[in-house]
Length: 140
Image 1 (tube, rainbow, N blue to C red):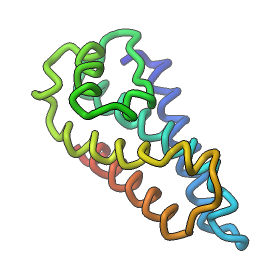
Image 2 (cartoon, one colour; image 1 turned 60 degrees about the horizontal axis):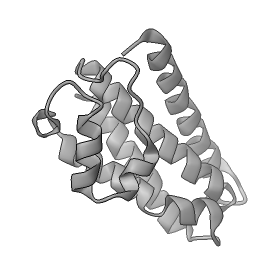
Image 3 (cartoon, rainbow, N blue to C red; image 1 turned 120 degrees about the horizontal axis):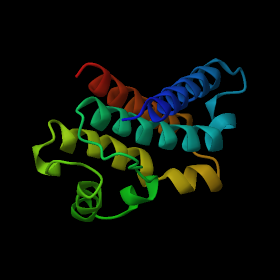
């Protein structure tokens, strides 16, 4: 992964963590951050996947992961993803766990971003999913 992309992804992760922190500290509650959280968690999850694949040195030069891929069936997403990496997607360690977390984050992204207010519990679950994904990738 090129340095420019690595820096961009690092910045996205920092912004995502800032949004999480800001939403959790807001006296009005995290639901006032619902749309921003949806966008941030989505962007952050994709950035984490790109970082992971880059660390493994299997992300093709210039390849970019699109959050919309995670709206498809898992098999189709793996096919698309396999075109972005230099190895078989099935050979990538922890890929099913990683994709599971990202699918969970993306599952209600648009409803959270554009729809009616959801509960704090639902938002906290998405935050926790992102934090588990981040921990999985950073501890690899």
